[in-house]
Image (cartoon, rainbow, N blue to C red; front, side, top):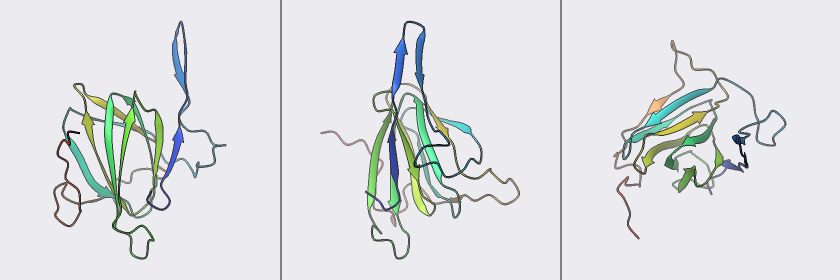
Length: 151
């Protein structure tokens, strides 16, 4: 796994009224700090990525549907430089995925419905000076293809 990427397995607690799932607590080992909370969605088959942050650490939690989240480590001096990680997360695999600064990441909704992702990043979004740097999702410098892989 890419250095500094962390996963928290989330526990769903169902009962006759519905269900509850804690996402991130201030006493979790992987809690750093709170910046903001936001939700983003993707339609089936749509790729959102690549991008990275210089300061911000992301904490992704899929709350509806399924996502394929892909990370690429392009950090100078990292022991996992040039490594790619794929994570399938959502209703069938409830996890929190912590993505360190400077690691390229993107995701694609998989399945037949719009998928919803909650992010609890460590920094608030600054409209005047965003800590968000984009790379084309099909950039040949990133060794990953977003095509469906049938096994």
